[in-house]
Length: 485
Ligand SMILES: Cc1cc2nc3c(=O)[nH]c(=O)nc-3n(C[C@H](O)[C@H](O)[C@H](O)COP(=O)(O)OP(=O)(O)OC[C@H]3O[C@@H](n4cnc5c(N)ncnc54)[C@H](O)[C@@H]3O)c2cc1C
Image (cartoon, rainbow, N blue to C red):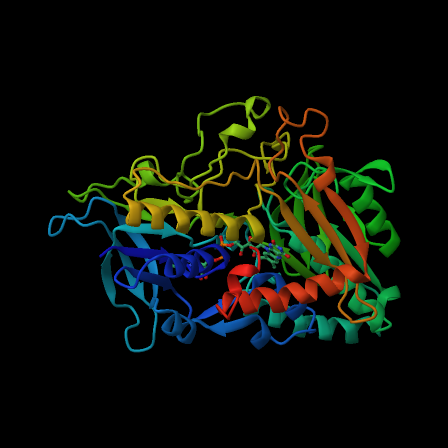
């Protein structure tokens, strides 16, 4: 009997757990650890954040799904890894603190044969003074609660706009943020809502980003062919902003926020102040606050985790200048190089380097978008790692048997630009691969046939359909494996 412990029930961990349960006979145990009792389909938080979807529609209870699947659910937060076991028992363990009513605060060591770290990002609001809704002065749409608060503040903003001009700022709250696509999507949804409410003329909407140019999205931008012409994601995105009258401030690192004022530095060395009435700024991501210990209890955190808190996997982490990196540096099996039964998937694995050019202001403030690990690659990683672990358990395979590198994987991002069956729109982007491979595609780094950008009403329908399909899949309903990651 083997026990596989999956830490985190988000896109990558939940996918891994469902596949493990499907692939492993019942004598093997699959355990999922997650601090909240619910699953959140995060992409639809954007619609919660504009009041177009109630928070209940983007979450569901994990316990009944896991009970039905035969997965053991532990509502807890993992905080320490003991990959060699401890003085009492040589079986590897993960230390967790329970969060369920009745067991809140109780600490337990869960023994494992294999562990998958799928704990996603820690929302690092603390990196910028004044950032975030919990103790800061800005809004967020990263969790259903944050998004619900943003929606309520948007309602107040609509009322205030009836009385006079106001400034709306949406973007990222630190020079090293990722997930610019979500900020882009929220910008266009807010713009759409204000237009629908008849108050758009009084709103100055500013998109504040660490991207050096619009359309970078932390992946160095894209080139694609449209109607037989070659274009760039920069031109395409700039025209979307111009059409909607959204002003963009690029190459910016937010340094601090006070009530009503955002302070940011730019690459030209300028220090700037931006007054706002409504601001939604995404936080930078870091790994969770992990510790790792060897059998003797010595701290080996630096062996297992990168300084960012993300887990080291089979990437090439040799320090190199940006110009020297290669698509081959990216991991494909997500196995830790020191402990072969430890894996990390989704946002929790440590990327080897930036995809966008990292820059800094003359004062040394980083303006360096971090690499995104969006839903589709995260789900795919969960699936391939589950397949590898199942093979390792069932056939004794000595090494992972499945792989998927972000330098080979495609990603699709459908960024809604307004909700509504007839009035909605969405900007749909697909890229392959996510990490450009300049050896395979010397011209643009990506496959031009599979890298596209389109905008229209049909994109909105696709995005709405994906909401229903992905929640159906995450509930493990009949035929869930037919729905791709
Ligand atoms: C507002 C927003 C909109 C987005 N829109 C899109 C989109 O349209 N398309 C797209 O492809 N991607 C989108 N993304 C990105 C997408 O949500 C992520 O790529 C995806 O969720 C990453 O999956 P993950 O499993 O790595 O992390 P998550 O889905 O964040 O899951 C991590 C899980 O780990 C749990 N956890 C945290 N700490 C611990 C701990 N210590 N112990 C145990 N469990 C823990 C968390 O509670 C969570 O359940 C969006 C992101 C945001 C913030």
